[in-house]
Image (cartoon, rainbow over the protein chains, first blue to last red):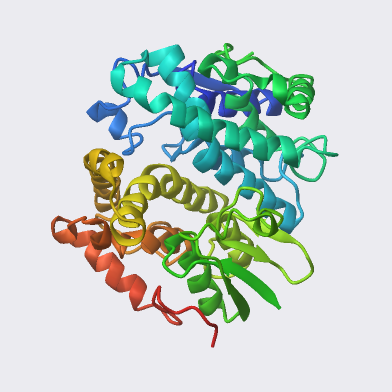
Length: 204
Length: 204
């Protein structure tokens, strides 16, 4: 049995939960509260030395961290990852875009407003986070012109990676009203077979 | 002929240049000076809507961005990317680690000190960048205990991705004296067949 170390409000963790549900792969959930520092204990650092969720134990002691690497591992050979070499590289392009140009702004603004709270330092940095987050949303909106999904016109882990924090961007004070294509794409993702919401932790 | 849009001081660009040299794949280099805003022109945004180098034109109009996605595209099927599914996921784990937990600190500190210069706001943020960069280097140093390379004990694109900014970390004021395993690994990477320094732009 797979063990998923996760924190339910985390979009990065949700990516893995959503894919495992859609693939019908059972898992045991072990919650680690990042607010209480539970991902920085010696016990957890033995699982992921980088001290972050999600991390997964494949059931035989093999450990894997980084949400998008975990998505790749489970989706390869399924309909959630294209077979064509160039499309596979495009999936990676969007996943690296998400982790470098989207998550540090869209997810961090949400974490401050929704999870950790806003102190003076964060309040000063919030406008920059919002501006860069909107820049990432602009790139997504433009890419979705004439496209149903991010790569190859088929639902893939690129969509899962981008959906995770985009669909809760409002919790980071982002207004998606100006992004009609993104909103239509969010609806398409939520209509996929086996879809589960971010609040669903247990399998089954 | 492949066209690589790049900026020579960029470690992200260097990853691609290094792999293409090591694979013996010729390319045409088109330099875009990020300091002069050349990656935010309408012409360049048509190549990469996210406005960043490196980006590559495969020669037939197909465009690909994100350094680590480009590394994956060219290395798949070569000795630079393992065949085993779990090792491939581990390569991705380290590349996502690099882009999320290493580059935003190790590379950004270097960019401020070495490329853009340090204004008051950056000066105030530098200690945090250095602390988080050292945290990433700590993770690398621990992982290299008993290992010659990051994944599967063989040189791969995971090493290329991490080498790019680690080997010039001193230009961001990082002191690698306390990291003997990282320094020995840097020497092993620099001894690989076909290695070229970050200053080498043209092919051949």
